[in-house]
Structures are given as structure tokens and as C-alpha cells.
Image (cartoon, rainbow, N blue to C red; front, side, top):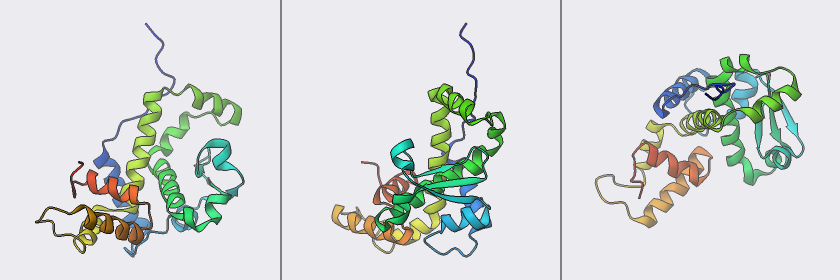
Length: 200
């Protein structure tokens, strides 16, 4: 029989991740204002040390990265400094907050030595890694674009009792992306996942 994987990640359904995001938002962003300032939450709410790092995206392929000690959050300098990337940066930070909230206890299994940690990461089975990323993505989407606010804002642009014309939907998605300060892709995914529009 093959050896068992060195690391096992739990699997949380999307609704569990969304619920945890709602609880987190209520605690750390009680004003209910949009867009949600995830950078302020990370730094002042969670007490993470923020580091602006050169070439993080080029070197590791990510805009933001939670430290192995779960006490630091690095962001790519170019992405952070350029306004046109703020939506993407905010989602990346929300994604890392998702790891912080959902996976902090798992970090006890991680090696503390950086070299050993890199080896550990390279040996995590794809299935386990995909679970972790799925959780963080679902958390990030629900944190930044919660269902109730999304539904009420959508109603300003479309009549749910009638078929939605494509042109009107495009305008609505653009407006919603501006309201939540995320990409139109994030809005489209949230609308489909929350069954506020069809997936076709």
C-alpha cells in the first residue's frame, strides 16, 4: 500500500467558508460600509505585520502571502503601489485572511525552518493543497461581497422577476465591481454561486 500523505487538510463546503467570512466581517468590520478595507483589518484588526516586498509576484506568483508564523503579511510592491491593481490586491489579501481564519491551527503541523517548510509545501498532495486554496477563495469572495449586500445592490439594476438582458447585466456587474472594489470576475462568480443569476 502507498504511504499516506504527510499532510491532510480538512474539506469545508463553500457555505461553511461563507459563514465563517460573515462571522469574521461582523467582528472586524461592524460598520457594514463598502468596500471593506481588508488591509486595515489585516494590520489593525488581526495585528499582522505588513511587509511591502519587491518582486513577490514575479518570484512566487502571488500578490500577497501570509507568513509561516501567521504573524506577517507580505504584499507585492508593484501591485500595492499601482491603483489599477487594487481590486486584485484586495482579493489576494482577503484570500490570505481566509487562510489565517480557516487554517491557522493546521500551521502547527508545518515545519518552522524555512528550508524544511519549502520542502514540506512541495510535498503536499495536490488534493490537499486544492482544498486549502478552495477554502480561502470561498472565504475571500464572501468576505468582500456578502450575499445580502450583493442581492440588494443587484436589485438596483435588474428586475429579478424578468429575464436579465445581457447589456443590463454587464452594466450591473461593472457597477457592483465598483461598489465592492473587486474585479468583475469576482462579482460574476459571486452572483452565480449565490444563484442570483444563472450560470449559462
